[in-house]
Length: 347
Image (cartoon, rainbow, N blue to C red):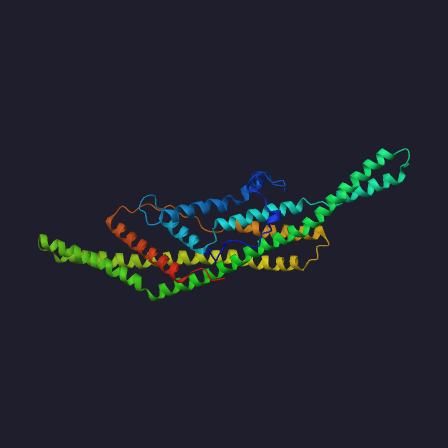
């Protein structure tokens, strides 16, 4: 309940909620639009990243089975953004299920049957066709009950779909704010450069300690000291350049998330307003709006515009190992700052 981005959704209408089994069967069922595969396939890309993020968070801080260098930054940003949450996936699944239920409402067939049956009854002889008339009247009454149920279910489904989309919109709006705050923090850390300077100093200290150890063994030459100074200068420059690349990568990723969710949030807001303003007098018009809304929500989870982590070979040379260790330390520091200073906004 402490989650303020895609936390618990309290406005669900319990009377029309599917059971776990009904939802599972729907997700594993074929798409109604004629495309190959099942409904669950629409969430495959999202699920894949969600699982990678959950594994990353469970193993955070452990040396064994840590992800590659680029993927570590990728998963760290995606995890912090709160976009990949099981509760968000559940909301998308619920929306797809209820949109499918609304699409299957058909008022024309029972209405046409009632009209046809009443016309047939009017032609029958009450004395000769009493049994047939009774049977047709019974069927008309059943269709009227069905029609009444469908007319009551229609606005309930539309409201439920609107509530789910509002829940999604609110979460996306908060993610937008979080990304903006994260970008501001990254720029501030980059400009100040305090941690980077600290790491460069650590690098220099490492080499000073190395010289001190060498002096305990025996004298060192000026050439050797000059060589070490050259190594330190080169590594310091590489470290500064690498840290800058890491900042650019994370900043660009937050910008990608921001753009992805912000555009969808705005479109959902417009459609919500249109749906809420409707009087539930035109079923086909409601279906068209829900289809459009369904398309926006589907686009949120597939395809995903975020760069995939590229495998990076572990450094072989001692200098490279030192360099990458300092960059890892810098990235860990950045995420620590982000987690403390850029938190989900309060409701």
